[in-house]
Image 1 (cartoon, rainbow, N blue to C red):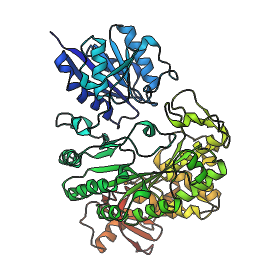
Image 2: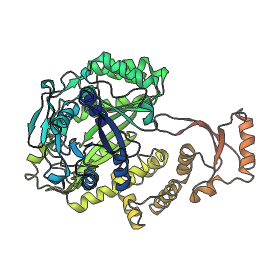
Image 3: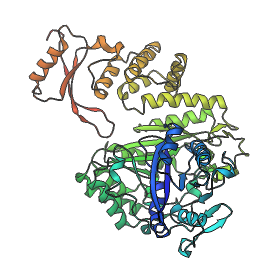
Image 4: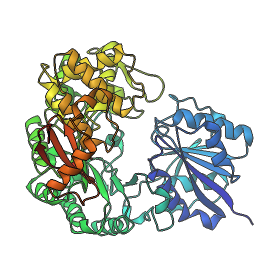
Length: 558
């Protein structure tokens, strides 16, 4: 008898992303379903693909069952795909799972005819139970499955070591040039009102021995980046130290970068000591600050002592070996536009490598639903269910913050304008005012949210600076040389690189004089009467900028 074919479909938000969820469901299904004449395969696409291409990718193998992992970024795509699949063949069984449907579908556009079963919560046990229910198979008690109409929930996997490792030598290289996601724990000990992890039950951990074994696999296969999806990785400090120590012990065996979301206030001296020893670029840390307004944080159950938090971030930054991302959330209770400016300026002063400006979202099942009326919230009725306004901040003020986010991403978070932004800040009362004015400048030029070539960004910032009485041309050219390996300069900066004689000949002569003429990737670049000797074969693994060997002052007639 031919086995019935199951396709687990992941529609990711970007091409570089991968789905750990469908792989977890697959290893869970593969423990049980083959005995019942089922075989499971994975299909991955992204929301940047055309709907008809996604449908073709799923249907080309003629599946009997299709399972979807549904999130706020892909729900509208999956709604249309499900309707199309059912139109093609109504006998195909569709099973939905993921956070966007686990707490009900009334907020979605799914109709009862679009799906056959919904998996609530963890899928390793619930998905195979759903399949067996649809095909009237006897369901093993070990799955702990509970059915209510077209929904199924199974008992959580208490011992995470029971879940087989989702990667192997056959599938890992399918993810080359993509981010690989990995969980060493489930749940979160904290109760932030806007986060689904706050309702996911107690925190459970993989054993240290299992984590080390999995890390060995990533390192031995030279995976480029492994992103831990643990909600607060260092909530157990001793365990965090053990894992980081192991990565440190293996750091010379691989180029793998490891990304962790941590609570910086939980970082103790032992953690600091280990992290300071990491080679540059080995570890990347994401730190959610969200706001510096204590009243706002208390209302969403996220009280963190600011002084302690900021001190720990500063200590983490001192070694210069870790790429640090800090996060802010606009639209929190009690935080109006002016108060958000204060949060922005205080967090910006930490000079993290990236400052992510996010906007509050109303996720189904989170405690935020219980206080939305109290604070006069309005959210979009479509994904990503983002804040429109509340009692403290208007729609138009939130849109202004969106405009600020646009230029913050282009300039600060790209790491290409470090020197220029520091110089420009001196001409404004605060960093927020600077970005607010840059955003207005972009808006006047009708460039907000529009694609802009990287070289054009230098010219635009140069024009903006001059309009505000600042000459940062030399800073901009310095940043360009250290960020871009290109002979074609931004148009407004070309006069600064002109010499009395041929720049190419001048560069060759200068490199010969300083003993770098035989280094193929070392070049001399000119800013007025200054020369920069730059190694274009050596990027800083933390900020991505090329290595500046030294600066040299030359006379124009040399």
